[in-house]
Structure formats: C-alpha cells, structure tokens
Image (cartoon, rainbow, N blue to C red; front, side, top):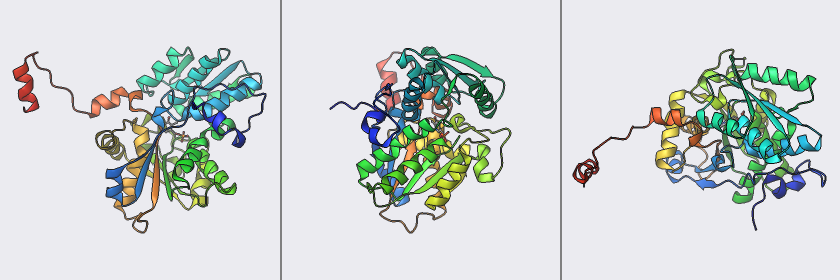
Length: 352
Ligand SMILES: *Cc1c(COP(=O)(O)O)cnc(C)c1O
C-alpha cells in the first residue's frame, strides 16, 4: 500500500480530527540505515535516520504537514516563519500544495544555503531577507503573528513538534524498541524536543520497553545551551543551526536531563570531517548541520563515553540533504581535473 505521509500513518497519536483537511507531500517513512564503518569505529551499532529523503529535503516536512493542515482548519489565510532555510523551503512547499495559503518567510540575509532559498522562491513564497540573524527574524515573526491574523509555523507552533515526533515512532517501529542513545543536531531545539516527546509517548503506551539517552550537539560558535547563555552573534558553517537563542531551550534541557543524556558542542572542523566521512564512507550526502550528530558521537567516543555500551544501538538523525548547500560541498571537496577529450589522457589520469 502506498505511504500517505505521517498524519495518515500516525493519526491516532496526533491532534487530528475527521474535520482536519490534510495537506501532505507524503513526507516521512525515511530510511534508517545501519552504518558498518561507524559501528566498527565506535563499538556500538550505529544507525543513521536520513531525513534528507523527505520531499523538500529535510525533517521540517514532518512538522509542516501538521502545522499547515491545522492552520487551514483554524481558518488561516497566511502562514509565516523565520528560517535558516529549511523551514522556509518546507513552509513554501506545503503552502503551494494547499493551493490556498500565502507564505511569507523572513531569512537572515547572506546566511541561507542556496538550495533552500531556491526552493522557497520556486514555491512562490514571499521571501524577505533581513540584515540580522535568525534570532532577530524570529522576534519579528513572533510579534507579527501575535498581532495580526497570520499563522506562525516555526517550531514554537506545537503542531510542528507533534508532527516531528513521528521520526521517533518510525525508528522504534523498525528497531522494535528504542535505541540506547539518540544523537541529534540542535539549533532552535524543536527537533530534540519532538524526538523526546515521541520516545516518551511510545514508552507510556507500551510500544517500547525503554527510552534512549538524548545526545544533542550544537556548533561550537553557536552553542547557547552548552554555554548557558544567549549567543548574540552566533557563527558556524552549519547555517541550519546558527542560532543563539533557541526557542525550545527549556524543553531541550528537559530532554537532556530526563533522559540522562547530554548536550555538547562540536567545532566546524569536526562537523566538516563528519560531513566528508558520511559522504565518502556511508554513501549519504548531508548538509553540514546534519553532520553535527555524527561529529558529536565521534567526539564522545574519543573520550570514552560509550566504553560500557558494547552491543548498544545508537541512532543519529541526519537532518537534511547535502544538495541544500552546494557551496559548502564545492568548497570542501576536491575539484574535478579538466582534460582534453582524448582517451589516452583520460586513461592515464585514471591509471589504466
Ligand atoms: C532545522 C534544522 C536543524 C535544527 O533543528 P532544530 O529543531 O531547530 O533544533 C538541524 N539541521 C537541519 C538540516 C535543519 O533544517
């Protein structure tokens, strides 16, 4: 039977009624891939939840299907978000899919990966770039959506979290239990909040026997939760997590503490190393922010964090597709050689 998206699949776990008009791009049902090399390296069974195969190329679609469906049910005509790119791409696509919503997105000028901007524009969103960062954009969007009849579709919108928890359900449905650890990049902290909610609900309902330790990773130049203070000028190559004042800060700390996990920082160098390793050794091309989860577990392994856990399972969320950010790829990967259309020259280059 055809997969019909996360609302159809997990309807009984979601705040959906028979009246809700479902807007879906058949998001979800993403691959959970066993990573042999990483497993050997770390000494645990490492699985990669590859969210880049969602329709707009990131996990944001899981929450957007719900946020947009509920916005229409509640009579909205306009949706709005602040975005480092992927929320904008997803909101724009679902608004187009609905054929009735106008979508307005506010982005930090110059800090949004090319693919994401192309998506938002292609889907017909009104894109406004501000001379400020994501945190400035979110403040403005909150004020507008508080005072005008415009629906906010950032992860402050509880329906976003509800939809995104479906990724934890999918993992449990495949592994037939929760993993021992779950590693995830942390930006605005909605996703770590959503996964923890999903794991807790499955446990409460008896669908799984255990819950994972949640391991969140921020970029070192944008690590407010790790440092315990707002970062006024967050910096990182991983633009999707370039956030200095996460909206779900409190919930992320709860996920960390209730699960017995941690939230740590990884440097841009560590992120790029993991990004290259994923592409070269697992066949999965992600955007830089996504590699923070793998960079994080490599760092923890380096300091012996997993030494007790042989045989345990760890799932890393890979949040978005590598094609989102072609500039980073081209800057960090070897350029092709240019030769004449001459078979001898080419054979020599190949070494045949
Ligand atoms: C949105 C996003 C994140 C951060 O998720 P939060 O819910 O904001 O913590 C990480 N990676 C990618 C690719 C994203 O699009």
